[in-house]
Length: 216
Ligand code: AP5
Image 1 (cartoon, helix red, strand yellow):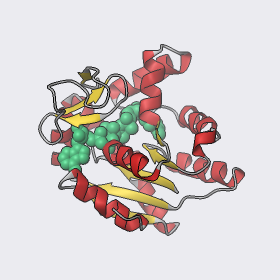
Image 2: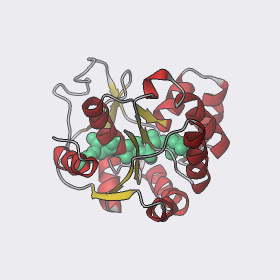
Image 3: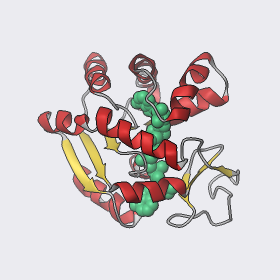
């Protein structure tokens, strides 16, 4: 199954795509995680991306489109993929369509996670992420079993640099301007499904499974 998860920063794309990855056995591809890894390794791409990410702006389209073009050709994507955080602009969506056409594939569903702004701010300011496996937690809504330690790999959790309130607000403005138009784009392609992203993580997940017609 080839799936895109759309939604504002903090809507739960990373959380739900990790659950889908486990359930469907296809890779979750997060451009945010790929860029953070490049930044950590101080590659040319990582250095270039880091300033945009720090400010909460989007990394230039050509950079992320190139990353996705390469990644979708990896053998583990043959049976499907879950895109988390890509596409984020109409140009990226149009490029994705072309890439998939070249690979003789298409999207099965675009799931839009809808969450109100106040909820997003509270979610992002309490988010913690594993430094090794990127597993996402929340200090109140989804805490790890041991304080600040990842349940999966026992590594430390960290707070993302762009999860400060001021940066969160600029990310939300950019989302409204650049990414929200994708809702209309995918509506007109007849593959958009909207899920109300509030409530228990497992309740949101069950709604997604229902849409995908996958048993819970
Ligand atoms: P990216 O890493 O993609 O960040 P984002 O899209 O802003 O989304 P987030 O990761 O902040 O949120 P999420 O929706 O995944 O929520 P999560 O599941 O973590 O991108 C970072 C930056 O990289 C961008 O700003 C940009 O600079 C660059 N970039 C990346 N992709 C790009 C692209 N395509 N083009 C250009 N630039 C790009 O959940 C958030 C919190 O809420 C967690 O703590 C979680 O535990 C909690 N939570 C989740 N679900 C629930 C629930 N149901 N109830 C309560 N709490 C919940």
